[in-house]
Image: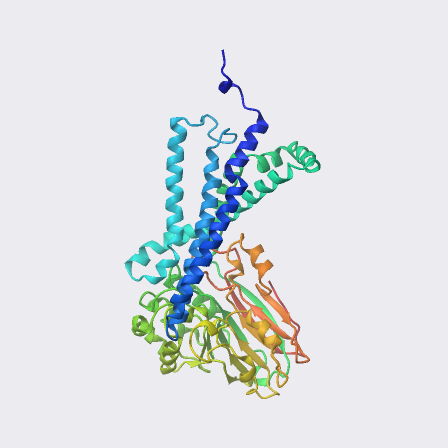
Length: 517
């Protein structure tokens, strides 16, 4: 005689229990969110004492460290959601794979232990990635590659886990309403939708498979450099600048997973373009110069360009650590010289002014809220938009003062690492002179497919060419935002988004704006 426990469980009960298993109950999720919120407040509040205890530039470097701690707290919360979602694979019934397994059997428990341990190792590797930037030598070289790839996989898995979590929670809420319940019953009749919306087993398998496929695509496409071209009309362009061809490089992030071979490929592709000038729009490095000296400098002189533009984020280390290793930068040669502005990474680990003094001693023209003449063009270089948080007095980004030094008859090009500065520029009183072109990087276009929708939702400027209305002048500015030449952190990027832009400057009467995006 069969006991009650041996009776088959109704399908509706199994689905309801499976959905609740993931959530741990919605109230439990709310408690976790509250815990996260108070944890974030505690880190921020206590961190403020640590930040304000710094003197000068130390405030900026300490602020960066507190930001990493807050990021880790977010990652812990996300890892918890991923863990609960994936471990739900072992909730019965097994409808897709491992259908022979039984709940609470020795085989099932063994699989659960192994899966749990694997997930914890993956989480640990992903979480320590950002801390590895503070280490040097063998430890970073040995761990960074595997940790950063793991971080990329983790990022994709978070997206799918959060997506299915909110989907399951929404379905649980909707089924309590009679009108919605009828609609959901109709959806259940469609096999694919029934599996994807109500079967946790299918959800987990779908998440893992798609994560691995998309991660592999990004992994193998990251080093493929795609050249995008644009002809930009500039009003009052001097004759000597007509047809000036510029290669725009950005976000090389040398260090971590970007090494000599990757930089050599970028330089070779740039050299093949035979351009007149090179703009490097920020985020040059992600590591110490001890690691990067031979990766970055030794091939640059082969480029045979008129000018080199380094638009921020040269370093991720201290002058004491890196002075010997960045010394080859003094040998950069081009017809019009080398120009540089600061980016957010230049304030993370050391006194940016110490770096500026060092680079000036190399003969590099560092544009710190200042301008220079380039073939009859007023070229302005701005400090990074985050420089006001660096702790360095009077170092915040300032366009209003420097633009008054430009002759009204000259066109104006602004190099600014973060495109968020475009809003500040457009709203500044530039009645004395307008801005014709702004060149930025920084966004990476999200770098991953799963991040792209959120980046477009949050940021006004992500990738490509934009028209920026100028509030106090009659003509608008053109903004070029590159998705970056390489990648930051994980060596993974969307296909065709590792870019070099080839920009040709044309007189406004002779060209039209072309965006081959």
